[in-house]
Image (cartoon, rainbow, N blue to C red):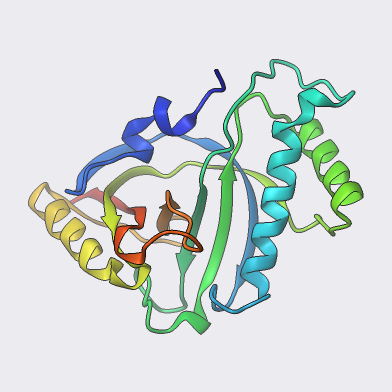
Amino acid sequence: MAFDFKKEYRDLYRPKTTPSVVQVPPMCFLAVEGEGDPNQQDGAYQHALSLLYAVAYTLKMSYKTDYAIDGFYEYVVPPLEGFWWQPGVAGVDPTDKASFRWLSVIRVPEFITEADFTWAKAEAQRKKKLDCSPVQLIEIDEGLCVQCMHVGPYDDEPATAEAMHRFAAEAGYVPDFTDARRHHEIYLSDPRKADPAKMKTVVRHPVRPV
């Protein structure tokens, strides 16, 4: 059976609908950075996702090609994630989507090397006729965070974030947004198919002890 990150790391991908504090370990991701309204049809965000998925699935299906990845095992492509920020804003303001800056990412297994990534980018570019040069392979070390499963539309996330911050304050933590620590979302529902009221999104914010 293919390895499924969501099932193996439930503390990271399946938190409760009540806030909790979590220590997030360093992880490797495919990443594309950009800016602008993610809802813009055929915009930069949608294009970034097409690049991410092209490279992610090229890596996943590599075992069916002549390219051999050392230590490879079959796995389910992890969910799309996003780090979001805006100039001068702690966290995010969903009412001003045009000012969004974002880093869209998909996790990759630890056995993926820079050489594997370079091969996958070139292969995806050849097969999909896409310029995959914006895709990066990066490590993100989030560290100490407060998180919660948000159920509902993305625009309702501020209420969840407020509950997270209240919980964190009661537990002796304060938000710790920096240029390296951002508002983080993990998308467990497909917005093209899901009922907005039932969409599940992990919301995660960096914190530090008071």
